[in-house]
Length: 344
Image (tube, rainbow, N blue to C red; front, side, top):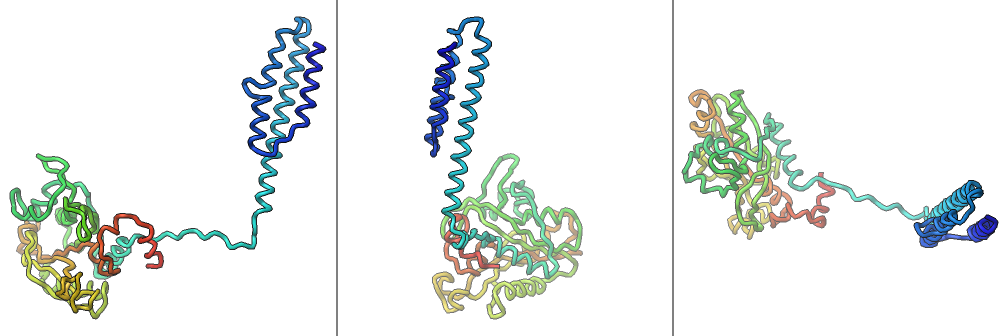
């Protein structure tokens, strides 16, 4: 018992003189005294050599020694942390300018989509949305493209299931069908959203992209209404000096159908690689809604007429910012996206 007291006094003197200025020194103290093979564990093992009548006194003594070591470790730990904080505070130069946070911004596709939506909102169009996974009826058949119709070959489709067919929608025209089926007329909507086509990715094409399609159904709607609506859109989107032309085209869900071109914004209509030396760039397709489409949705085609149009948002964005590679919009390259921070 006397020998144990002497050992503990020696250890206390040694521990009191310990200094730990670094994390490594603090960890070394913990391992040496409080670790699984440390001094406290070792000296606790001396209990087996203590006489039975002294075990109670020895146990109390060893427990006090353990608390002493733990308190010393906490003292060293606090001193070390306070010292590091003090050094860090001394190194801080409050006269230096602060670190600026990186500003976020909308994606260029979102910027242009919002602008398109805003323009048509002023003409009374409301926004309608629908599912990206679509059935054959809403994506093809109701749009006057029954099974084996050659027009289906115009769109390379991602099929999820066959028989029945479930697909990734190839256009947002499926949203127009869903809205017409509700039977709430007159109907004036635009349908922005992402669409999917099984195409080879290149500077001018991608397997997914964004569209905005428009639809107006009411009594006595004419092709002249369609033209004036799109004239207004082009002037608001690109400016009053941009020229417009319509070319006859074919879409199974409109009749008559047309494609609309604008004078090239890059060369001013003089001819360049972007417009293929023609001075014109096609931006959307349009036409009068086919009577068969109206009937498929339960609408009386003798009473109601309507027009529809659709455009790729990437194409409009490329023209607006003179971006020549479609892939830049989906690569998330910060160097590219940072150019749009100042854009409102």
